[in-house]
Amino acid sequence: MATRVMKLREAAEPAPVIDQPASQRKRTEIGRYLLQVDRQTKGSYETAESAEVVGLAIKTGHPVVQVSIYDSVECRNTLVELPVAG
Image (cartoon, rainbow, N blue to C red; front, side, top):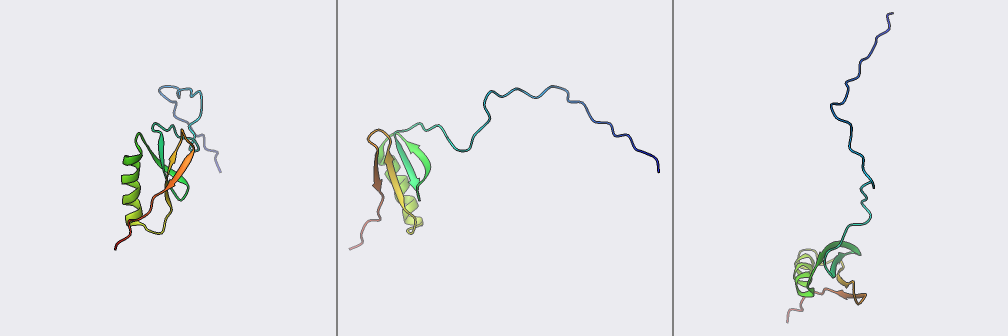
């Protein structure tokens, strides 16, 4: 049986050099208030009110999950609860 020679294509431009690899662990947070669902950060907001509105929407759609707002300056967690119908 004859041997087969394989030719590889050459890249037109070399790949760019990256100083640091992309990481999935740490995202840059912009706002002071972090919205957390089951202790996982889902977003950051500048005001507590805007974080609470989004948290309440999540809690309304999924009442079983734990939704909280973490204040990164005062290091305080606040749970988002559904309003009591009464």
